[in-house]
Length: 314
Ligand SMILES: Nc1ncnc2c1ncn2[C@@H]1O[C@H](COP(=O)(O)OP(=O)(O)OP(=O)(O)O)[C@@H](O)[C@H]1O
Ligand code: SF4
Ligand SMILES: [Mg+2]
Image (cartoon, rainbow, N blue to C red; front, side):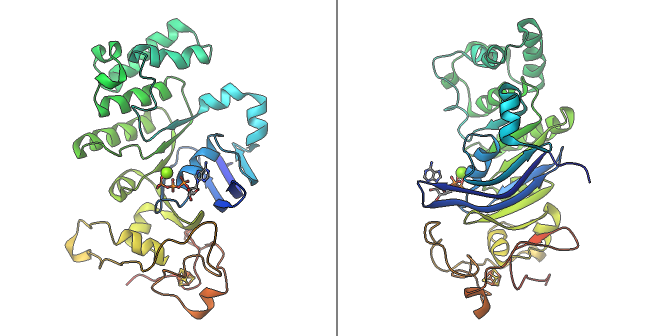
């Protein structure tokens, strides 16, 4: 087996000594893979992204990047790591300094990383055209350009450093549907062109379905299901995935699922339910689920499911 680009093993993150935001994440991402991360608000998606980009330190567990422990990788070559792993934030405009013109914002990473200015400028021009950013946009301030253009600027700032991995937290949130579509096409084209690996967080299941190869579903800081995207959308095995996907409009009316409304509140990560952490809301709960915490099991198909009684295709 080839070494994955990223491997999380039993990663835990606890904030303020009691907020158990990640409670044992095991996840590998292969080079070139496009992975989607979904789950309700507070399930730990952003925390996972931040651990991966070294913005948050894991409380316990190990992370390897191309076979090397993350801490060692950073110690060996901090700037190199920062270059290779780029995070695209949800609010692209807010992530750009308001007092700098777009051109300066784009050149800034080159200066920070001590890259050749002449080469950098040539690369900016190639990428600007590739991303469909008008030349005039470079002379404007972030608040003077559109939301779609601001995302393109953020992507350009990331690509200028020739990264390996792009971690995108809600890359299309707040954009018009048509702009979303353009941006997704762009991300897909860039993936192939620049041999990128993507981890994409989105509440928009249509986005995840359209561009990811594998989907990872989180609940209360743990992975409850992970499978190739087409297989997961065709037949979810975990009851939480089924409920989540039931909110997703199916294109084929014959396959339209009945909407599964989950009962009860999302439990707190400070005070987790006993047994299966989903049992307080699961429509399929059995007595065993209240006492016995199911492990994440890898099935022969490669799908991973954390449930004592996985669903079978109807
Ligand atoms: N710096 C922090 N200090 C304390 N608690 C935090 C911190 N960051 C996140 N949390 C808590 O950790 C949990 C996971 O948060 P996280 O932001 O990772 O969720 P998320 O899945 O990204 O949610 P959303 O879909 O709303 O973006 C939440 O309970 C959140 O309140
Ligand atoms: S283990 Fe039980 S409670 Fe948990 S998801 Fe499966 S059926 Fe539901
Ligand atoms: Mg988030």
